[in-house]
Image (cartoon, rainbow, N blue to C red; front, side):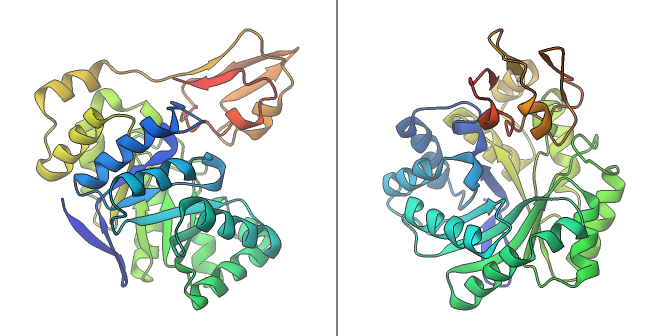
Length: 316
């Protein structure tokens, strides 16, 4: 396993375990089973895991840490908090629910521009205070928007990391293409900000071209680490093999080529439109009581799932 310096004080495995996929918004594995997969990744040398308040999977991570004997793992979380009080609640929830006194990285979730950054200034200031107190080791943002990184640089925010969507087909980049995002990341890197990319496989759209897609991201010099969602020990083994050798085992490569993930909307959908309002990709639309998904736009993030009042949306 290759380790890199994401920040001057955080050494992380280049492969980050993207934990969204094991929890309630996607595979919804039982806590014990999801924890086993995460703990297995820890035992194989992955020391970096990404989560979020939204994902509702802190209990998976706490159990995984217990199963693995409390290894020295870097935990990154995120929150939509925009006030000091909400940010404080989010940080304390993460500490309590993971059983960790210190959360290594805490980010504002899904920032879009300098305007959303200004709107979240109170929460961001609290995160900076937590960094000073040692409760958080690094502060950052996650984003699908080029403008958010540009906003960080324009405002001169003293961030440690950014977590942008980045893949070879520009899937999910909301306000430009992969070249625009790479240019913004390069400027952030030049400003001393660590970069760990998300959705290198475009939320599943690029699985059939997994090797080319991962090569593209790993060959981008400004990218320090890459978060990849995993749901089983076989997927952990396949991704570790790739990150170590740039080759998937033959069996894993064949399985990846056949794998397809999709968002489904059950026929008991109320057509209330809450999911359409939540979708930042414009993939969901509701008209005349019927909700449909544009699969070309959907990045299978599952963020629409928790707003559905009858749990009619699933990512499988």
